[in-house]
Structure formats: C-alpha cells, structure tokens
Amino acid sequence: MIRTLRTNAAFAVLTALLLGASVLLVRQTDRLREGEPLQEVLYIPSPAVAKRLSLGYSSLLADIYWTRAVQYFGAKHKAKAREYAILEPLLDTTTTLDPQLVPAYEFGSVFLSQKPPEGAGNPQAAARLVEKGIRENPNAWRLYYDLGYIYWLELKEPSKAADAFARGAKVPGAHRFLNVMAAALTAHAGETETAVYMWTNILNDSEDPALRANAQRRLVCLRVDSEVKLLQDRVDMFTAHFQRPPANWQELIAAGLLRGVPPDPHGRAYRLVDGHVCLKDTEGFPFITRGLPPGNAQGDLPNEKGFHVQKSENQ
Image (cartoon, rainbow, N blue to C red; front, top):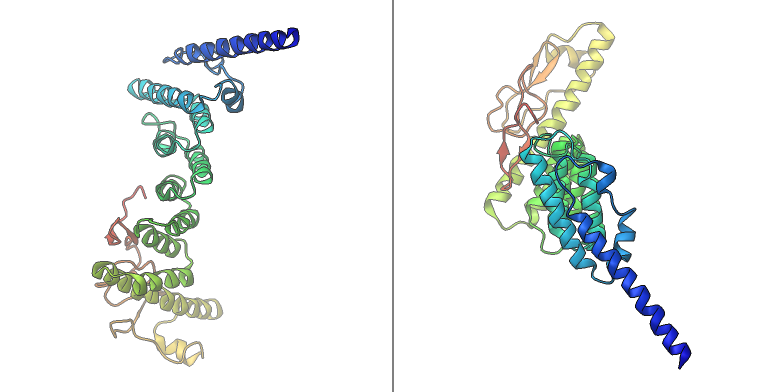
C-alpha cells in the first residue's frame, strides 16, 4: 500500500511539473511580437523537446505554433521587415509536432521563399521545409509541385525542379501538369533525350487533345534543338580548323564535315548567319532553345495547361 501511495504521489508530482511546463510553453508562445529579441523567443531548445513537453497533445500544440508562425509572419510583413529570424524555427517546430500538417509546409514555404520585405528571402530553407513535408507525406502531390517551383523560380535549378515534378507525377491522383513541367524543365536543363522520352509518354498516354497537340509541338521543337546542335558542332569544328566561320553549307560539305544539310521539320533549309545555325523562319516553333537568330530570345516553359508562356526578364 505504501509503495503504491509513493508511486501515485511521484506520478502526481511529475504530472504537475509537466503541466506547469506546458503552461509556461503556451505562455511563452504569446510573447512572439514584432521586435522581441531572438534569445527571448527561442524558448524551447529543440522541436523534439517541445514534442516531449506536449504531454501527448502534440497536434494541439502544433496548431498553436502554426498560429504563432502566421502571426509572426503577418506582423513582419506588415512592418516591411527585412529579417524574419525565427520564422524557420517556428515552422520546424510546428511540423515536428504535427508532421501531417500539410498547410504548414505549403504556406510556410511561401513565407520563407519570398524576397524581403514580402518574405524571409530564404528559398533554401523553403526547400528544406518542403522536402521534410514530402518525407512525412509522400502522397501529398502538391508538395512536389511547391518544391519544383522553389527550385525553378527561386533557386534557378531547373534539373532539380524537373526531378521534383517527376517525383510528384508518380503519386496516385497527381495532376497531369506535373508531367508537363517535368518534361519542359528537363529540356530547359539541356537533357534533350530525357525530355523527348517524357514528352513521348505524355503524347501516348494523354487523352486530352490540347495536351497531345502541345506534346507534338514540343517534340518537333526538341527535334529542331537536336538538329541545330549537331549542325552547330560541325560549324564550330570548321571555324576552329580554318580560323574563320564557313560562308555557306557547301564549304562544310567540301570539308567532309557534312554529307548534306537536313531541312527543318517544315521542309525549309537551315541558315548560316555569321557562324550561327538559324531557322529560316521560327514561326511554328514556340519552344525552341536553339536555331534562333542572334540576339533573339524565346520562351520555352509551359503554364498549367502545358502551353507556351513567354519568359520574363526575371525568369
């Protein structure tokens, strides 16, 4: 009996201490206000400690942390702050307490990635947050979508963006646009053979007439890119050997570098302009990255329907 009473008393004391710690934790979260020093708001040593102190109510505490993260971001955003010092720790703790809180990954990554004063200007942290979300929620295809855009628009890494979109496209129920973006960005990253494979799969698997037509245009443009690269390599070889660019295709043929000049997909001969291989007419080739007249630029990325979007100077 005495042993039982001692055990119960010890348990009661421990429970009181943990409850007190939880109350202190919640009260400390209320101290997150604009301008408060960093050392005063990092009140928990680690997300793991916060989870242990939640007394099994980690989802509830995650909601509190998420609310505070939104409030913190909102106050900083309103003040047009240049630094969001504790935003990443708040989001990390939120998603550790509740790894399935998908909105925290989705919106938190936006808060982190936007340039100041609109956000924290930390796309690397945004990518880490979303990768964490994908590990915890592998079937949430929108997280792959978010990650792809962070790598594409913020970090300027099209190959990683293409990989994120391609991974998301394999998730059951994922939007078909992920496949479109993966294929487009693979081509944008210079991996033509992989892009051809992906667009061919889209063409063969899709029942959407508009998407199929777009895939056909993409494949034609990839053919142009491949042909122009081959021709340009031969032109560069001639230029390196003779110390001048060829005046016409016949000089390349006479030098044994070409057997003949292949026509473009519309049956028109490619042109030579000051040592550069160009299309005679770019009409009908909205996604090409090669064969454009010198000084000309053309967009090669799709919107959510998979159609052409002209790139802006910021992209």
